[in-house]
Image (cartoon, rainbow, N blue to C red; front, top):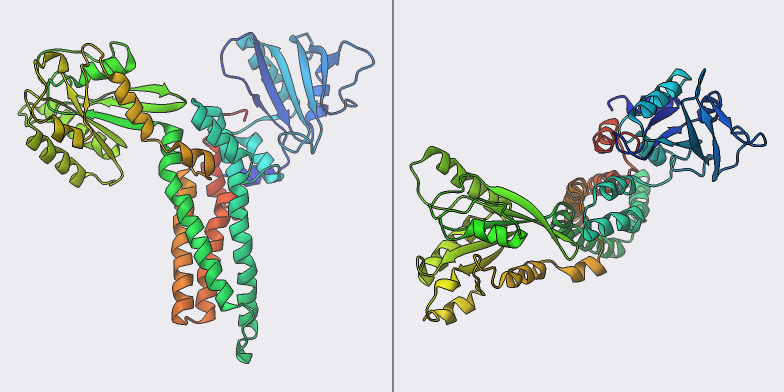
Length: 468
């Protein structure tokens, strides 16, 4: 992807398999570019004599045979005329039988007639370059393809439809208007005039700063909804962590044994609950160990604790007192890099309790959940608590960002906007304020693609599959 802009400017016609590799009932090959119709026309013969590919209108389908010296296959060709196509160029989609041999030969046939194999994401890149959508919408296409839950799908659809882009564009336009007035002041610096109303400018900067902060705060939710909410199951050895994982997943995923220290590395699996993906991680038991392998597993447990959003701290009342539990959870919270983690105490092995614990009130204050992982009792209470950790109200009512690239750009623009605000309050010279304002505009422009570099485009579109 290094020379991607050069390739675009060359005007090549590109082709690629658009359906998953491998044998299936049907496959589809795409071809896009100014020579698409002539290239395919050289090897395609419609069954109806009245039909002509070169004269075919957009949004029509032609049926015929394809091949050079001999028939390769009978195909259907979807016709899209520029600019009313996905890429904004002349584009054809050739549906053939799903034989791997036919797929390969069809692509070789198109290349022999003058097309070249597309790079990753080059169809979508051409759509971006031809103004079909902005950069954040293009990224949403990739997110839509890999979405595996209803929430990740909804986030991608929202971004692809441009709601987030409109908000960024609106912020940027307001800043551009004031930036123009500041630049005008610099042109007349010797006359000591002010074209930009400083009172209105301060109010705008405060409003935009608040809006950017709101978008940044949504990233925590958006990112985990897209990639799955990590839930670490931790505790001392032999308290039932692996049994709980099996109960949550409703399958024998982890080995269960009475021997302490059975789990020496973390075990991970995914479960989708009401459209939200949760990544459950069963970890090695927390204890001091002289065993080298078990010690490595315990180190990885602490790494999973740092990365998790929700911590299920499993303990056995017969082995751990409430005071000790409070100390252990406080230590974990103090060592957590993210203060927003949710710690849920889980009292396991309630099937072994012969009477209610005398410290029931203290555990209730800690919002502990009583379960028997072995009997799968009260597992639904854990699931409900996990769902409560997701702010569905924010998902419905707010613009949510899920891209770390967007978060980084917003963070940099926020720093620049803060510098503008401070400059206005301290009487900083106009040229310095204007410089910080240009920085803010630059980083906001990176999100939607108004500011791009070859490296940026290469990084983004290399995430796509070939054929999209």
